[in-house]
Image 1 (cartoon, rainbow, N blue to C red):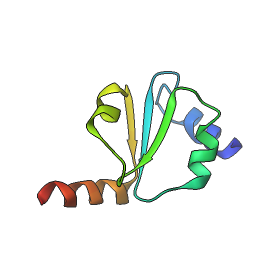
Image 2: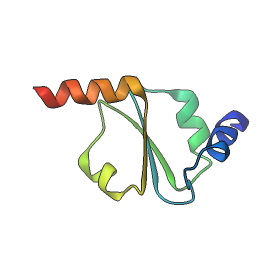
Image 3: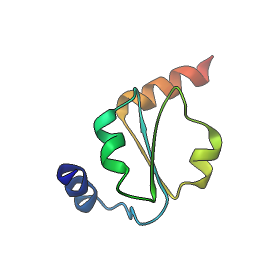
Image 4: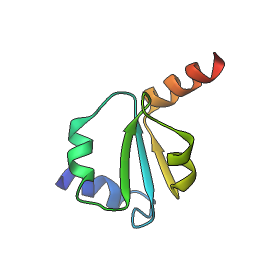
Length: 75
């Protein structure tokens, strides 16, 4: 959790606002760390939906997740 908070603090992201983190697969370390932040939601590409993206002020996407999303959109 300390590392997670350090990463957020070192970024320009205002994580006090609704923030969505998208991973390619279920990442339990990120899920467990984000539970301590009521404004942060974590999902993976298999569960991602448009509503989650629309309601988030910030969206953080792993590179591998972005590649997967692009692949799914081409179908």
